[in-house]
Length: 208
Figure 1 (cartoon, rainbow, N blue to C red):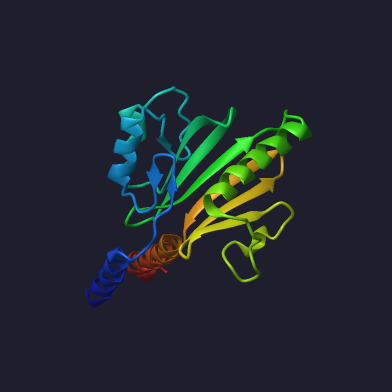
Figure 2 (cartoon, rainbow, N blue to C red):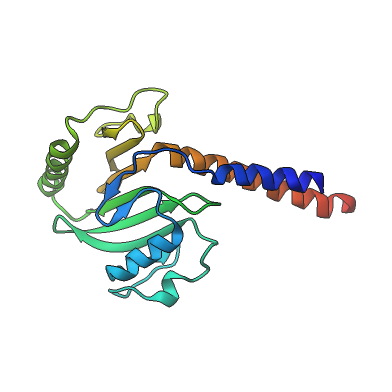
């Protein structure tokens, strides 16, 4: 019982809101709760679905969007941005279900090198006008593993990052990250994994 209370207490501490300058992308704002995410998708008729469900309809479908509500921490939909088809992924904290990252992926394997470079140049110009000159991620910083060719980073505020990177297969990925909420997502995931392991040990420990 005491262990159970400690587990719940640890999770409740993660619910306490932390000050953050929220990022904004299109209709999305970091810190949105799951109900806000679904209502925003409905209001803008976006074909959102919990990952990994593939939703092929063009508009919002409540039955698909709300399937397994409360069990998913990632939602996806297809869009068209800068005249290219794109896949948008919303990542939420696993326990409190708060939006911490938005990723947009343009998959352009059949595009010419010139077209891909033009798309990237347009993105760099748009983002640089809005957030200033880009930099490169530094070793030890968020996504230091992205220190590969083509990674660009903007810092709209001390707590937000915008990252643009090239990936294999002609993929261009743009990510908006709320740093405090992403850190919260990591801590929540660790707490949930630990809680699950302890519950499993309590149930099955006597069988071993």
